[in-house]
Length: 452
Image (cartoon, rainbow, N blue to C red; front, top):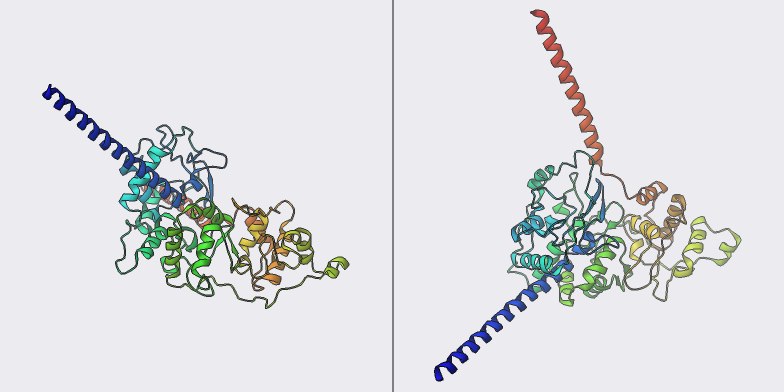
């Protein structure tokens, strides 16, 4: 009886230990998935891999690039259309090196050059989330079809040899833990350099001008280094943290376009500690003086005369402003009731007018707060240029102006990369050379036959 009782106690104890171990393993797995979800938000994966109205991470979003539209892929754990068959090594190879399981190369619209710095531990967490925390979707995304020769994905192997040299992040022992956390996020998951660093002729980031500002084809990503004139050197820590968390700050800055999307879907969901770390790191970077605005700013708030509007003596820009903007921004651009003021507005102190044009064309629609309507169907290219030029001359940097031709290009999605023209010229030259070789070879063969 005692033996039976002892055996029962041992069995019960073993069962309890097994249950606790299983629970610990399960909780550990859940923690890993939850951590991976947070990292996926930090990496803003959903912004590119989820089409409007589509299922989460099922791909199909057309990404406008100077070379043409690149469609994002399905990264759900579907074994039919997604990455369900990917091992951790396959996943890591795609995220860090831009190479799919089938060996095909990804285009750097997927920021694998930045994601290469993701640590092994975070890579495992991301893999756990996408395999266990994301619902599989068996819908295949549209195929990317860039013009020749850019449709040859193997060409990216040469590009990677030249420009993709990233490795997992290694902390700088001479810096604080907060600085290192900010560096890790900015350089990797939040991939700030993808937009804010200018690119060379082959569309690779110019490391010497890191985060110095760059055109995205339509919107302009400004200089975010601590330069007081070209960048964010005049921003306080609080200004930057508030902007990253909400899309607005007290210094007259509000996000629009891709940055607004990044804030709504990614930055605003990060922990206060991570936002603070990002701001700390950015404010400690070497200053870049490129992409500074001319600095021709008004010294006082301009006043628009009601009389000039009523008598018709006001310039066309003022009339367009009164008709389309004054209801919200007030007659003299002072804003109010949650609507930002135009005098001192950061959007009107950029080195180019593209962001102001895009805001008027497309509108600004944040997840929270008041939206600005789009005017693309109300103003033609000439009117749009006239209005934006009036805004810069009256409330912003008078040294910045735009043209109807530029408005037209922005309305159409931006200018194509000169690489396309060069490729066409190269193909034409190649065809001419090939034809000459064929003709020359035919002449040589004919002469040899004649001699015989």
